[in-house]
Length: 207
Image: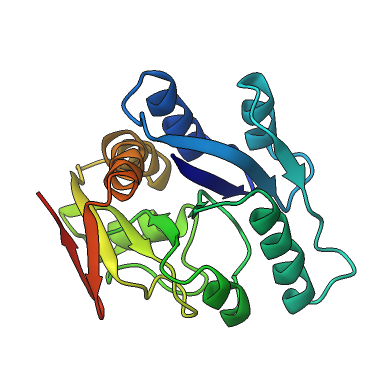
């Protein structure tokens, strides 16, 4: 059984996508053992509570980034987490944390990396950038996490069309519904079944 720790800061729609696929049996070899937020009032924690999933608020106030990462890592290790999933987590994890969970942290980003990504490119910003640039296709990417933002090896991507009249909010909703909420559970399923192989930066999905 793959033991998952989900890190959140906001509404938790990607968390809900994972919960739904666990409950419908698609993720039959996965279990969320903790949901952790750096925001006390994150609605994602209510989602966890409604589904009887253990959750934790770990505040950053009064801690350096390294101290916060250490507290986070200790909590996840105490829950014997195999895979850390970043689902709208608004804190940049440092190299010490990433080393402790090397090749065991994944993130979903709302663009086709390497487009519209990197430090400060989150929330509506990637969608605004896509519209400003005039692209006809955007999408989402699930990738392994490295020290540089959105720079880790790409695991899987899904394209989404951009239409005339789209606003950042409309495009964000389409990317979530058509890409993020499908990609994230699929990658977790592949990891739970040992179907993902890494050689350097190259990620191969096994049959």
